[in-house]
Image (tube, rainbow, N blue to C red; front, side):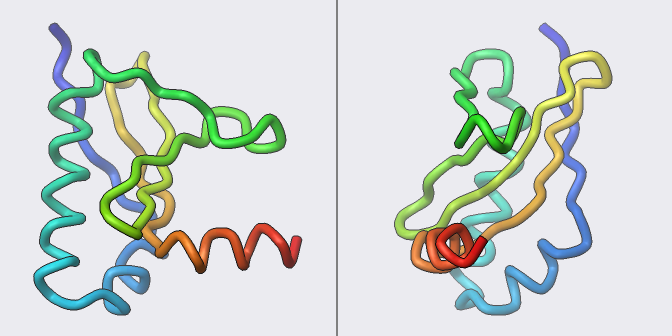
Length: 92
């Protein structure tokens, strides 16, 4: 079974600053969990306009990521609340 590593995009740091410290830690722990279980999870894309972009829910937060199966990397693009995610989508 291949090991996956986690790579965080720069925006994730700003995203986590908006969360309470205990929630931010929970979200970081969940990204590591995603990497360690990447082979066993079903990764459905969010929307046809965002090919490869996957979301994972943690309470009312969403972890947006892509999976590079060749390089064995889980790229974390954003971590935001559900409300923020859908507000951004409606403004596009």
